Image (cartoon, rainbow, N blue to C red; front, side, top):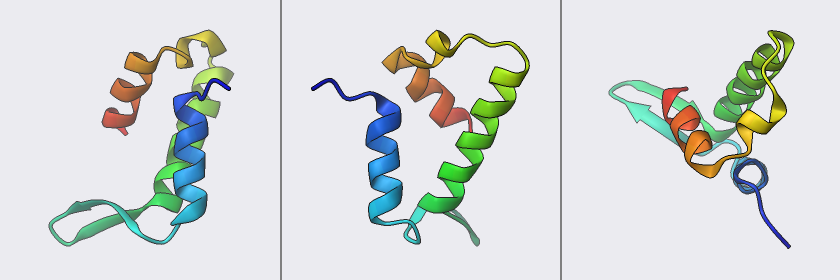
Length: 68
């Protein structure tokens, strides 16, 4: 079975949704919040006409995740 980055991310977010994913000083984003935000960004990009294939390249996904 081939795992996509999105599959791995969804499994992590489902397993520990309320744990901190990002901490910056007094600001914390949980895995659930980060998953919701990334899903919203992906849907907006698709609505703007981006091709789904753009999200499949692992390096691109890592860069996208870092930019959220």
